[in-house]
Length: 221
Image 1 (cartoon, rainbow, N blue to C red):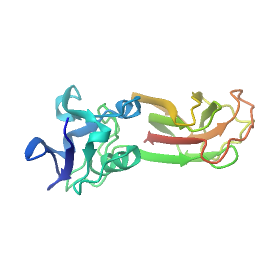
Image 2: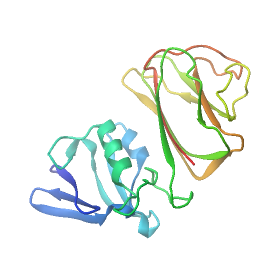
Image 3: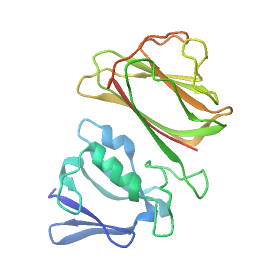
Image 4: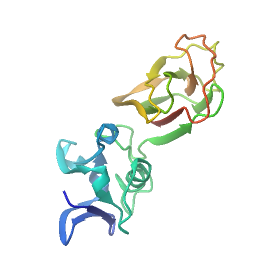
């Protein structure tokens, strides 16, 4: 496939290949399959959410996609582009989630959260009241498996003492490997949403990870 250029015009995504427009669709009705972006050959797969996310309107390799200036996308810049524009219009200030699923959280959509690990256990509170988790993307950039732990708590988790509701192994690969988990109906955390990253899987593990070992992206409401 020739290079596909992504241009936003009046709250509409225009994708052109050479002199031919192959897609012209309001950004309000666009969502991207985040799992396809993490395949061995990353792909951009777009859905028309007005059709219940069942209609694929574009599919192409990430390496063959550019922004309006002709600058090639990489994973980080495409995710930024998608989270900025997809699911929005000129009258909608908040983006809906970047995922192939309906937005079940009301008119304000979900909120993205990003963490690049620092040295330590990276305990953080994401939401200080009850909420729902809608997607997890965790990428490991080290030669050792790390463990993402998610807590129902309104304050910063006490790692090793508080018991996580979820423990997710993050695969090891110095070139990047990970997990992408969508929750179409959301997973409820009644007290709040907190996270930590440790080197061991046990609930009471307090093993530190290194700076840049893990990149975490979540959506919640």
